[in-house]
Image 1 (cartoon, rainbow, N blue to C red):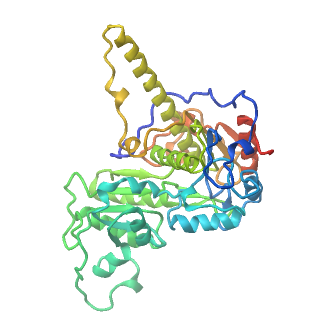
Image 2 (image 1 turned 180 degrees about the vertical axis):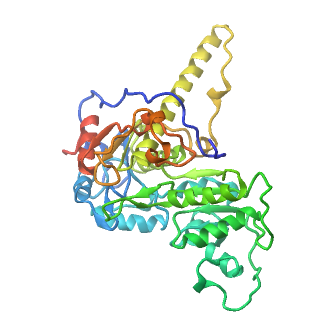
Image 3 (image 1 turned 45 degrees about the vertical axis):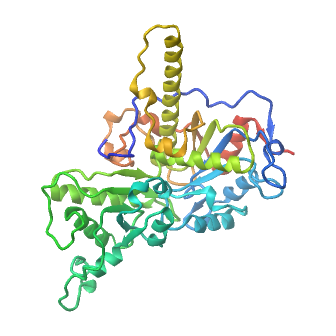
Amino acid sequence: MKASGLVFRVAGSLLCRSGRLGSTAAPRTAAAACASAGGKTEQPGPDFGLLFDIDGVLVRGRTPIPAAKKAFQKLVDSKGQFVIPVVFVTNAGNCLRQKKADQLSHILGVPISQDQVMMSHSPLKMLRKYHDKCVLVSGQGPVLDIAKNLGFTKVVSIDELRESFPLLDMVDHNRRPKLPSSPIVNLPKVEAVILFGEPIRWETNLQLIIDVLLTNGNLSNTYETSHSSHLPLLACNMDLVWMAEAQAPRFGHGTFMVCLENIYKKITGRDLKYEALMGKPSELTYHYAEYLIREQAAERGWRAPIRSLYAIGDNLMTDIYGANLYNRYLEERLARKSAKALAQVVAATGAPAPVSQEVDADSGWESELASPSATSCKSILVCTGVYNPHTEVPKDASQCIKETVFHGHRDFRFDPALVEPGNVVQDVDAAVELIFKMEKFTTSV
């Protein structure tokens, strides 16, 4: 793995195929899952939660997918309250959560709160060590408001940087300074860079981000290509492509990142390194999504621990890869806990049983969010977006050209097991029906 910090490993073990079938217990009903009209009456509640991708699953561009509204009518009761904890996990990052929640409410015809929405940049709330640093943000939309909403106190946009250093952006002749000008040095020194999503003017953002990285934030200086490190770089949304109204997928932020990485390597001869990669398929994203599911269940007064997550998406390389990667993490974590428990039993008998340090090794993000309660994350692929059911994924990574098959980020290796969905269905309504069947859950009152 080239990225450091919060970019997590992809373990070598294959996905466990067990646990895909629903419980054999008697059918559960929405009535049993719902709290009283007052809100927080204690109820057992459901022990599973749903994670929905948005683009290609619920909408294509601004056009709703017909099955979406039908699916969500099954997920709410007569009062419009969800009968199952639901979180929308999108790699989009160009707006605030409340705006996205309002859009979803309009599209789906059910009330959605911002606490049910997870943008690709949402986990940045946890990275408090950067909140007091001066950060340069790249993207489009209200990037300054987004950064401040996440907890960053000193934020500089690409446009502000360009205005302060007018001689740096020279690709577009019409935007070059008409008269000789000097830098207007009224900005603090940039200490870190955050990539929220694809910008509008790629050439401007690529140029200024490279300038910041190669001058260590001192834009009045020349490049320092001999340094083996650069300022901290955090990126959200690694999607190479995404599905809008067009017949073929459109460039996503992952494509912009490919450009940035290759320019940096061409100039310096070294790989660009990330302190954190957020958004699907990062484990951090799914762990944070599970945290939101648990918070939602607690708010409704549902006592049952969340044991299963179902992730519905349209992209093998992000939605399915990410869900399967998190499922692998949950299985390995459960195995470590079992090994620790066994070691404690053996130790109680007086026999020496040294425990591997990995058993107690919790990631920083685990301690920040509390340990997960889920033991599985099942992936469901829909055919209404990026996924083309006529495209076959090679079973052996060595028999294909990696770049032509694996659309995931450079720092996540291709593993055929991770892009194999647990189930493939036509659309999101069929996905909800399948989940209800697997969980023996009924909406009858």
